[in-house]
Length: 316
Image (tube, rainbow, N blue to C red):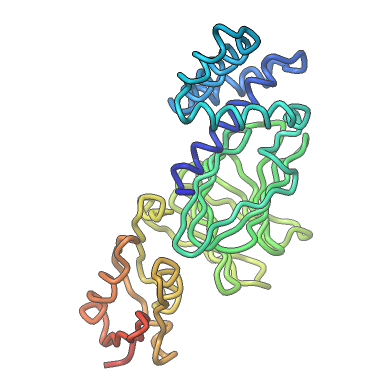
C-alpha cells in the first residue's frame, strides 16, 4: 500500500467512525465541535464523510430487489473499500469514546525508505520518517505517544482537557499547542519546534522543564540532565516531509546513517575520524546519490562505489 493509499484508508476509517458516533446518543458538545474541526481541517475529510453518508443511503435500499442491484453496480471502487471500513467501524463504535484510532496500544511504523502520514482521531497529524515507529496510548486524561525509534513530526490538535505528551526513553515532551519534530538517534534525543512551544523534561521522574519555542532545537544525550538548545531555520525543521533533507553543520556520520535509509544499499564511512566532520546542504530524498556526487566538493573526501550498490566515504 502506498503512503497515499494508507492516508486515504485512515481518513475513510475516521469518517466511518465519526458517522457511526454522530448517529449515536453518546455524542456530547465537545465531540460535536471536534467533529466539525475534523471536517474543516482537510477537504478529503468532508469528501470521505459524504461518501459514507451516501453509502449508508445505498445500503438502506439493499432490501429492495428492484433498487439494490442497480445501486450496488454503480458504486465506485472506493465505495467498496469504504463499505468494508464502515462495517468495521460499526463493530468498533463502542471504542470511539476512548479517543483512539484503533487498538489502545496501536503501533505505527515505517520501513527504510518509507514515509507515512497518520491522522489521529483527535485531529492530530503525525508524519513518520523512514524506519521509525511509535505507540499510541490515548485515554480520557492524556494523549500519550511513545517514540520507539526514528523520527516523527507532530501537528497537535488542541485539547485543554487532555494534554499531548511524547515520551522517548526517560525523557518527555509536553505539548502546548504546536508543530514540532522529535528524533532519537544513537542515544541522542533531538526536539525542534516549527511553531508554538513545548516543554522538554529530561527525566520524567525529575522536576524541571525546558521551554522551547519556534526555531529552537534541543539536543539531549542519554543520561544528561539539561538539553543544549540552539536556533535553526524554521523551514529546515522536518523538511523531509516534503521530500527534502536540510542539514546545517550536521556530523557526517549522522547524516550518512540517515541517508542510508533512503537507498537500497547503505553508505558507510571508511574512516571513523570522518564521522564528526560538519557538513551543510540540502538533498532530495528521492535522489540520495546526488549527495554522494556533491560530497567531494563539500569535504576533502572521495566516494568509492561498490558492485553491490553500497558506497564508502574515504579520506582523500
